[in-house]
Length: 128
Image 1 (cartoon, rainbow, N blue to C red):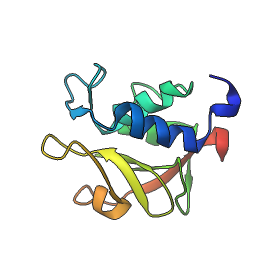
Image 2: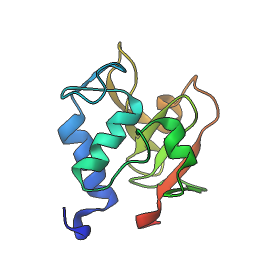
Image 3: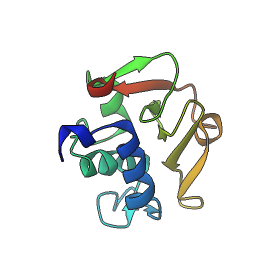
């Protein structure tokens, strides 16, 4: 993918269009039609030509120097902690794979990250 298309809006589009109907599975997270929270973001990154960190786990994003902590969210950022992550669609909302009952959801960041603990916002260094 040309670098010009490696931007936050194409990441959100990839997540919504290519992976928005997937089902939750940690065991089959890299198979077509399935993902967990981190592979949902990782697959979307791969779709636009950006390599996700490590095995695309929440810990890999937290440890990666490519995803820097920022104060407030904007499109293309991730809300992440050691247990969960979602893709930010704007300054207060997101999209992410939730669990086997809810699969992919669109909601506020606080609702999507509920019951997982304190989270931080990370931005890909390529568009920081």
